[in-house]
Amino acid sequence: MKTEIIQTYKPGDGYLFDKILNLDKETTIIFRSKYNAPSFFDVLNNGILVNSFDLSKIGGFDTSTYQKGYFKTKNGFGIINMTEDLLIWETNDLDNPKTVKVSNPFPPDEHLRKLYVIKTTFDEHTNELICGISDYFYYNYPPRYISSLIIEKTFAGAKWTTLFELPKQNFPRTASIQSNETMDWLNIREIFVKNADIFVHSTGGLSTRLKSGNMFEFSIVAKFDNKKEWVKNFIIEEGIGNINSTNELFILQPKTKKSKLYFYNTTDFTMNFEIALTSKQNLGEEKSNEISADIIGDRFYIFNQRFLNICRLINK
Image (cartoon, rainbow, N blue to C red; front, side, top):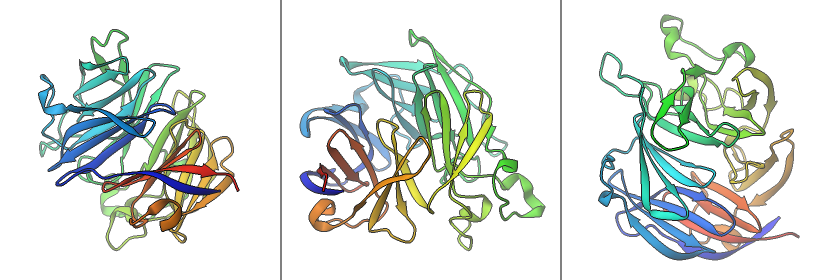
């Protein structure tokens, strides 16, 4: 599969792209941050900037902290602050976001460290957010916990379910430190929902969070049912990846071939195709470091904090 660049976007001086959400084939939401605080979100329609919103003008929601998760919903998108409150926009009323308070945010630990949401996916079957939540200590690393956030249909409130960790007995054995077993948990690199089942990509345990450790003890996408009961594992190439906007493709940048992206279908996790990352086809002047990608319709999006390239797919 080949691509060609249509549009290139940069975040502007002093800003970084914090999150890019494709709501459908036409609408793209771009969150831009400055000094680790979300400052604006821009709305693109068919790749053209049509609106921009200043988050600092929204009352009743703390935009000063960087510990935020971004998510899509059935009719819009939102931000979750720590595990405490949410802003939700519906696409037909972007001027009036809903502020939703969580009735049972997770308490801080004995050192007053808080948990925060890193990964999110929306379950249309239950109207819940399925979230990957940080560890108290390793808070700048991939998530440790999974929890569901139940949002009332009227946006009057929201409530967390219990915290859930990936069950070690269903994964290959990982390196551990016997003197501190509570620090040895499996990481959550990506999480998404398809047909009411939950899928989680993990690359290992404690050693993946140590400078002297191995970033990949394994590379597994685990399938769980809607009660978070383990069903089966799919072994894929070692690398870091993300789900596409339609939850039909898992996009992986392999560890050994960072100039390519592999596209796995999310039914049996066989690889459908690959795309080469080149300056002519999709990167332009950028490097292939720490990138994410998306495919929706005939458009291919490639981005990191410093750029967004919108490309056309060429099926050759």
